[in-house]
Length: 382
Image (tube, rainbow, N blue to C red; front, top):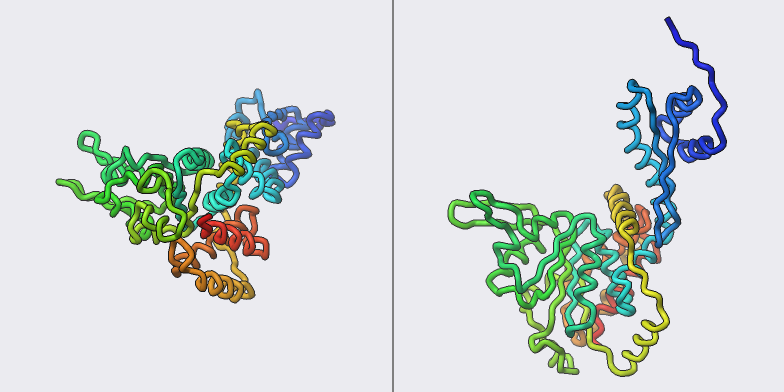
């Protein structure tokens, strides 16, 4: 015996909720069930400080036969609605995220921009923050670790080569700091305090994307395709020199490690004039930390952009890169680092990450200029 259902007009509130589901794969079915009063739509509002509030829709029912359907469909509805918000957010995502990364640090604009691009890169981009204590390096590392969907954080003074690659508990071998950040961000503070004999594992991850653990009866290989961001102090805790030669002498790393980084930023303590300007900013600014909801939204957006696998690099831009690098190479003797092919690779990856940060699959002029500006700033020693 068939049951005849009368379609009941949908109320204004439910109609508004339904409107946000237009385009969803089960839209017609949900509308029909709603008209038959077999389900109801609920809305949950999530308050954000970095973007407009999110209104998420879910379906509920008292019908036992439909409960499995609602449980299966609600995650799809949430993803569908969030994706629409993510597309809207993409228009200004790069600026919003870079401005809110370590918001308590009221300077270091280009470092924040480079770290933001590192979040969106699917290729290895390694960044070193080399500078005086008390300049905000640790806060920057914590902030990017917090925003990255996959990340690990450690202190160079507290981890050994074993801790980087693996940890033994009983008879089990567990991934260490680098494998735990596979396909994500590995942040290491106080890199200068990492023992010399322990740096081999780090170089392997930075260059090849894996680490090995060989000790006793244990022989393990772990994927460690990481994007490394590290902070370090100079040899004598604070940079004392002013000339390029003096500064190079105070760098605590040999070229084998230093040249693995695509960007190296030298951070000096502010002079009196700079300190006064920073003080003015602190006094006049209202520091707003990201909420948990903001962080979850940003992580979700980053994961959303990872769906773009290949970022097209227009042929027209290839000569622009060549010309830019040629000019930079001419001034190589005035930089802390050598201008190597790795720098060129990093520049291209920055361009691609810039496009992905705004959910685009093709590099544009503004991505190219953004990458040029970041690399130029990273080479400055004043």
